[in-house]
Length: 158
Image 1: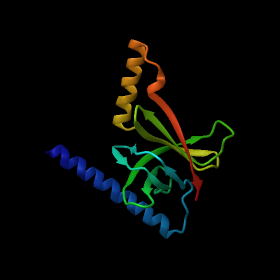
Image 2: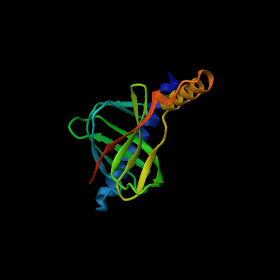
Image 3: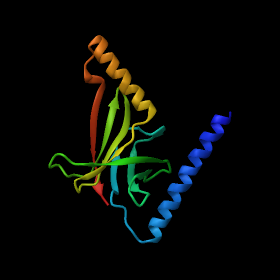
């Protein structure tokens, strides 16, 4: 019971902190450097939250760009996730959202704004567990990587 209360208070603190950071950013008139919109044709998971298929906008909610809000454009579900910067290694430079697919489960993994830089979302416990299961199954019984796939969805910079 006390663990649940601590977890709830921690999540509330995180959400309030991100909301305050977003408010300060808006008040300063700054624009998010990693804002991308995309239509996602499948349900997917961000952190521990499942989001439905639909039109999404991803925006930075902290001045350093570490905090991201993934918001459905037509409904109200949203998710917040911390990220790390990544640089494009190929000449692609197109806005997109990258997902890791394990069987029928999709996890948002990266956001690319089209300027050669992107954000790598931190792997959730569920995705880490699936990755470990896949790795152990592959090495033990020779299962191919057919159950794991990287899926890219084209986006639009905003």
